[in-house]
Image (cartoon, rainbow, N blue to C red; front, side, top):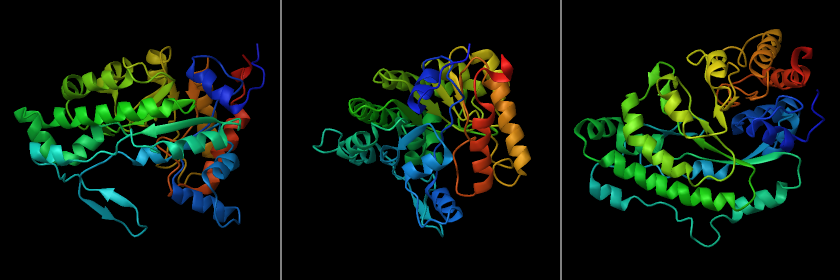
Length: 340
């Protein structure tokens, strides 16, 4: 039976609820630099977030501001484009530094006004609306610095646990406030792995971070997704026990999306996996088309797949290749897949 045609919001929420939509959804985080490239490609001066999502035919619109609000105490450096990069040296050296670290207060009058305006402005669109937060693993590492983080873990000084607990408490307050505004789903962005493996031992995740994460997700009452690049295989069972509806980006080649779908597809939707090293960067368009087709036909069976890049629509990607990906989703993503 073919699902009837859905709005973008219905399509996304059906997948997050474990159902089969009318076609595979498509949405992604789009870097500001890529928006500028896309605008130039179209002969425009600028494109705002909504215009970019419409041009690409995406099914969800993201609210950017909370993602960048997480306070991080680290040395930074700006590149030629003005983008700020965290260096991982860390400014939190002592327990006294922890006490002086200032977090924005979600109880401040007007704190969520910008987010409310976003939902009020776009709530009548057919798009699913989502907000993102960076909860605390990566901010904890960056604020302590790699040396400070490692020292605390090995010597059991408690600095990691104390700082992470502050992030958990702060993010809970943000999540509670955001959910009251009418977002359709949330995404927690918290990188904890490289392509070569975890940033720290799996036992550190289980013993130090997982208990706090369980407290954090108790505050989530609407569907949510989780993002971390890299090889999550060593902790994947533990991670999925948190009960997220969607996992992103299932990064190739370190994550085998076919195996993740086979083992875990009954419990979580998979979002992403289209290669950014070659496919969306410099491959011929027929390669882009073929990879999207393959992902949809293999991972989209029975629902549970959102097509997207293996991280985000980054500024170095080819505009033509990203547009080709968007078109291929529409071409191959309609259910029933493969005529069944």
